[in-house]
Image (cartoon, rainbow, N blue to C red):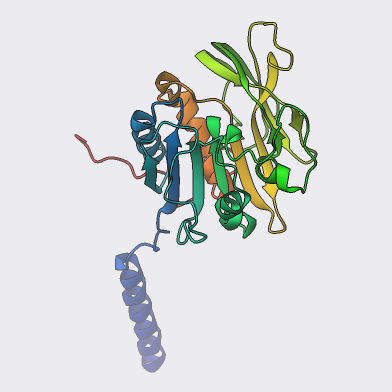
Length: 289
């Protein structure tokens, strides 16, 4: 009996030591931050300010490190450093396209911009990215999918040719069950530009529509303003919103919530409730910071 008690006691002692060691062990390793490449520059927008609003707003909402490629050139053909570099997105988890480059029309250049996404890299597209890389000579009429004139529209899932006046846009969520918008509320922007829809492609999933005061331009009063698409054979996730012209909108917490959720969703790091998955919430600031 003493021998048995000795064995049992030894086992209990070993168990307690092991439990203590486990309790003192390091917590499970956390995933590294998502790496996002934010591309901005070109015509018509205050990208010098908006690049920082987006970077800081996204990093405050999720475990993301956003690197910036920015051109101060204000033309419709900004000389962005991504052009001609097929590996411009190497090492990144997602690219955020926020450039305004409607006169970058060279198909080889546009193919290069699309190359990482065709290979499966997720993407987020903001505002004037919808009017960039227009290889079609006339974008006011529907272009044929799968052709050289439709390169960027195939990727986006929506063909747009222009926008109406700057007036408030009433945004209504269409699919409130989608993680990127679940729990968010309808809202009305300040004066913003409503981009028209020449075509919403088959397979494009519209999450929200925007309505502006009626005007005399057809197809400019009620349009898709937030949507998702799957691009190419690799089915790269693509999230887009046409909202985001003015600094006040880009700084709006509702806008930054939407963009951040879109980013997490395309990367597969957004839960069904709309919250970041474990390990991808923004680190909580220390007291006093």
